[in-house]
Image (cartoon, chains in turn green, purple):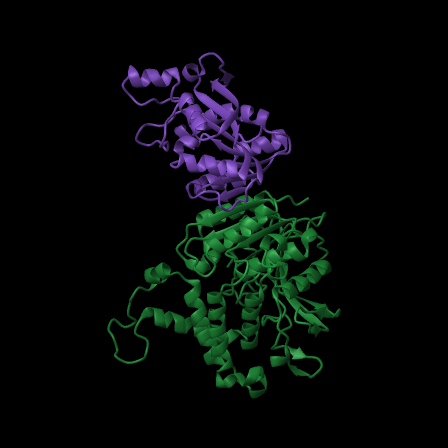
Length: 376
Length: 207
């Protein structure tokens, strides 16, 4: 892929941190690595850096392709690149794989230096706050004192929001897309079913499956299939698959009859090939635990009282996972704090996944907002 | 921008100066139906005002974001429940009151959320409008009412006299009034000679 608006071939890098990181759980990680990628150039005033935070299954590969894997296009490549809404000719964009991940940063599948074998079940539960703390250290390493913007969709947006609370002086703008200020019981319920699917897979071995040379593939498949259902809207599924049959007629057995079944199986298989089950468990927990208002008596306005950033909050009409009403809770808390905020509710049929899609108005809006960001 | 929109932008401009004169420096404002955000931009530049616009239309919302003002997508008809009482110095409804379905509710909400309200609207009692209706036999089309009857967003057309009666009946105290035609203040026979009216008002509970 050599499209003129692509950042082109990119190389993932690693940063090693030897200073212990104290996690919200009380656990301490003595040393860890973070995998990251950067696009564009940091300017002389170091004021043009944008941090892109990833959601559940993505990582630091935000844009461009790898020389040895030209099909592996970054997950937000439609947004990040030269001349794109997040213009890499103006901004220095950083993507980072979160701690506990399975794409190069230290996580459950990494070798625990104390034992010489994979962490597995021993890897601690990590939270959005922990990720922000680790990302801030990467920023230090890259010489970024203050981000022009921190942005993300879904769980990535939660990290952007947490940044404005934990590091108020280090974020000029936060782009909070398809987010919620905390998960609902229904959201947590879906995550719990996914975790149960993984943990009850006989190949899970209490999280220490690496030693057995197996992967809890069945559990991962189910978790991913369930996830996919929640990312799409009923309308989007109806439009894409309807009741279309795979072979044109019912089989009267339990093989794939409908296209939607085939699609979910395919997505599940693909996912179980590359995603670590222990990482999945931890990321869903990080989602469940995210609730910045909790320690302020459930008052989100108070939780955001130290925030200084300007915000763009975006929701999508068909997103039933984190509906527009959830984004409006965030907007209200920001308005209560008299912070600069714009809010858009995008008319989109795709459900929660809309934040990843090409939508002209959505991208125009992001471009308009990002274009106005002062980079010093 | 089509010609009707351009006309309405020109008509809008006339009321900006009047509003800006009334708005205290550094005030917190909420602009209902903020369009492309140019009034907020104007108040920000001229008076150092801050605050938010509310806009339902995608294209106008985008224009507001381009204009560098805070804009929140939402529907005025469902109220201002996302705002705490008394959180703004002024709540402004510029050239929008005639397009709002629930007039009483919006005025009430304006005075709940803001200490003062400011509205501007095209005066249906303007002599040219009267002439077009009574002599021409057609609904008026003018600089301040740039639409045809079949494509107008306006659901209530009213005069300066109507608005003042409304305020008297609803306990709304008028603090200041400016009536204009083609950007100039009209003091003699305003309901006849003014095409655009601008009012500042509050709840009228102060002694």
